[in-house]
Length: 117
Image (cartoon, rainbow, N blue to C red):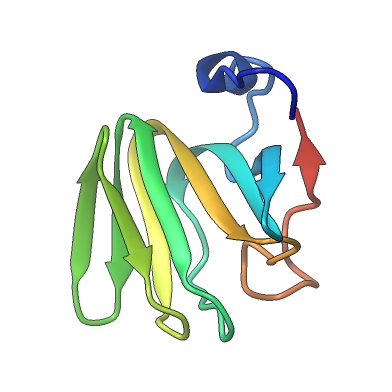
């Protein structure tokens, strides 16, 4: 990476929901932005935690035993193996960081195709 990355500009380049876009990588991790709205799928990641940082809007991270609400500027890490379902009543923008190639659904067969912006 040779220049600063403007996350708002990167988010302006696409409209799809639940389709993360890579903006950088470091130490074997992907840094991605994503637009979300509505309910995602219930899933877990057996081998990695799941990091969420809200850039704009509000989301809920629903888990079987509780729900964590995140507002702009707040982050949460879902521990590996914990089943969860992100949900946004209105469009929200997130920053995600995860080990390179981690499927967003926890299953390579149902995961969104990795794209960059």
